Length: 429
Figure 1 (cartoon, rainbow, N blue to C red):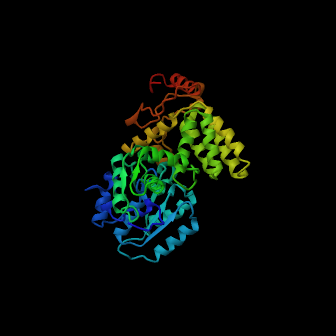
Figure 2: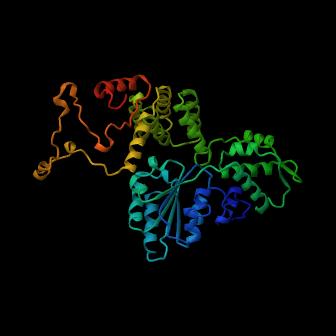
Figure 3: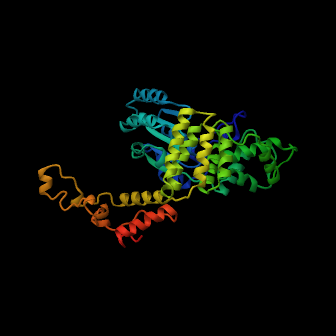
């Protein structure tokens, strides 16, 4: 680990071996998959490390790379473009034939556009590089499916309180700047509360408390001292820092919770700090489907128009458009029925991926297919009263399976009643 005093404590304490890596025992504990890969120098698959800030994603990627001995390239998705990705891929391809493929680590890979991710795909498919991506966002939403299918996903969890305290004690005894000081951890509740399982936030706040201590002979860390430091911090939001994630989370949860005033506050906070308005609009577009859905289909239309308008107009004029959309989404009826429906369908597909499509629903473009009864007995709904005919559409093995449960709101109650009239008791609506 590094001991340069001009670096933040969190960076100085970043371990480069598993010996000092704290937490994530489900991934690197004795006998866990990544522990075996690292300790036994097994071939490294392309992988995505998914977890909240400050839980060891970048550190784990560095340990994997250092232990492998493979050429290592690193990019930040905030700063890199397609050109940077292609230059590294070209460099990696010139190093072919090595025992270990070059490793490309991309921090915050969820911030890569589709075109940037597409630029990675070919190199991963051809085995030119081993990709390690770190993301705080659900890869299912933020990473293209083709890339996900070629990577193993490892989920990192927030650090437990006992693990955070272990980090503090390790820093006190091992950091070059701290180990000569008389530091007493009298109280840790406030440190743990404000860190929220984020080791980086914990160590940096702890370092602030140490530097602000009035008695250098004996530095006592107390809850009162931590509260004072937190309240003295003037810049609570940094679009490239740790509070970025806290504020966007509060923003989304305020709209989900139907509180337009809180949502507007967090919107203003992000805009004042220089956050990219398109990032804000994109998150609202996701919320409009995930948390409102068919309770108010207009929400998705308005959110999409907001994203397009923000892209064309830009800041500062787009603040009114964002404000209007925030108020509308926060005030709208809510339903996550569409979200839970597709997740249930995806789970069943993973469990039973090879179910047979009913013959009457199959396409029959050739005589052979017609002779095999493809498309036979299919009934065209528009030829029947109400443009509906009661036939089976699901594979026989899952006939009657219900994925969509309409939410309890005016619009989806109308949907429920219509489905009940059409399908009677088949789906139990």
